[in-house]
Image (tube, rainbow, N blue to C red; front, top):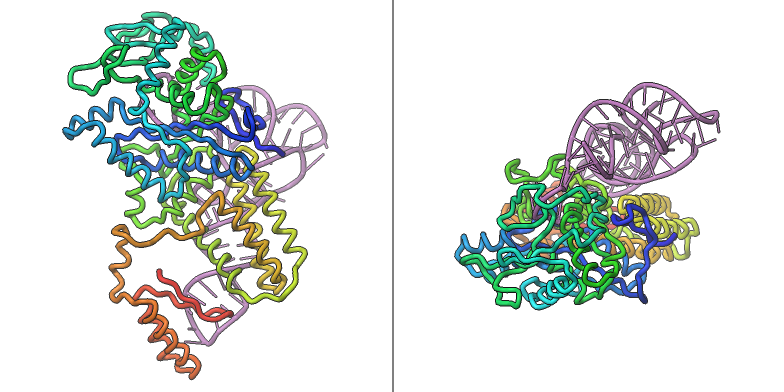
Length: 477
RNA sequence: GGCGCGGUAGCCAAGUGGUAAGGCAGAGGUCUGCAAAACCUUUAUUCGGCGGUUCGAUCCCGCCCCGCGCCUCCA
């Protein structure tokens, strides 16, 4: 079966392929850098990362643009509060965002574009809209008149035909002719940052940046536009109105929206005290891989109930996969190949692929991997897993990890981990090896008292010693 | 009020018109000098409730109950 996505525009699952050639042109709404990005935002960015990786796995070239909104009401307010310039203020959070993203192993889009660096493109877009008769000016601000775009509402499937001028009280500080009209260019207000432009001194409205930058880098019609559900209206609806009023062509063929994340079944909010940034979670001792796994494991169109129990479970799940990987690498195998094991490997990959092709059903894809791992552990137990099955298993893990990317441990260190300090004595690898050697000797002599003493000492230093069938193994906790 | 989403085992979560994937937890077992770790086995006669269609429904239809989102800035 071909690759399929649920398209918000048509409310249907559709087969996907790029409009032209082999390149997928994709735009995603990135962060507004007024603060540290929270874990709910990262649910969306993780979904976009899985999407990226899956498109590439399916052989497509990617041209992915993500914006960074670095001029906006909250930013201006916060920067002013701290007495900082826009640049100084946003730089800090932009940097933090990419650091966090890297910890979650989110790939960098091909183009990361900042709103403030694209003012001329936005001006140009607004001017085109004016030429097409879609705008009006009120008190120095330029607005988009939605009555000029009859299809308004087609993405969010709302019918706005009943909305009339003056029907609602304008809650914004600006005067609009129609409640649904939105601002393209905001007139300069007292001390706020502004740009000198043919439209007058001012700054861009929020929606125009995405239309202008998307079309600049990707052309008039995108293959995919993605973001969180809450952006569908009004943000994406407005993007469509602007873009299509300029080009008279479809702005994006596919619209993908990821559902929100809840914390312990509740909406995340500061007043509930369940508002977490990635930094908060890392400080609590959770691993980035576990967080990534949890965020990726629930299919993106389903609300994700983020719980600490679930986060712990995710960590254990990853551990199990790493154990399997380790077992593969360290077990002596008979030469030859077990046919059944081979078949299970191809079956696992096939199911994994079909599941992700099916609108990125990550839960089902993971199930395929676990079924395989259990079967192969069984085969290993019964000596039915042979030398030539090894690379097949490695291939299954490689395919899995190429998308989920959780097998390689993140560096534990840094100021974040309080654990390392709690161990009374830090031991170097060579010290450990020496002690283990001594313990091995003691065990050989069946001096278990001495052996256990050493094991206890190592344990105090945070070293876990395991005696396995294939010899001794140790790891730092 | 309008539009939309969801209610599946202790928790998270797939799925299908023919009788329930997977992960974690729990229980049992294997291995081991003992541990630990790991691995294996096992865990829903049942899929919010009530009707209907059907030979047969968790999956289709209707009604009801519950939770949630958007309609205003928002991933």
